[in-house]
Image (tube, rainbow, N blue to C red; front, side, top):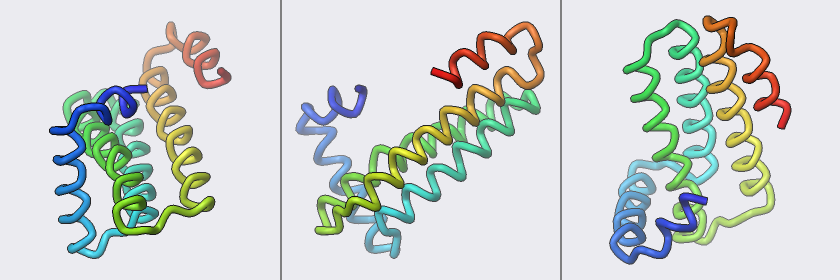
Length: 120
């Protein structure tokens, strides 16, 4: 949802395009960005479980940045594939579950709420 709203801004599209060009020049592919974003998101969930709020937020921010750029990388460099789309959707759900589990892990009063959210 946020991606759709931000994509309407020419300034944001330009920034994404430039960032994608830099990442591509560094050798990062769209699928690589998706996987790296997922790993950072899982690390954020672990950080939240350990009650390391600021490291978790930083890792989650990096994960979200890569998630916002993976599609741009694919489109900009002509590498849009069904596999990449499925990988992106799967990685997004993995990060969501990791974050929810991380937040509820050391906070037992949130267990049921976290379980409902993960299940939805």
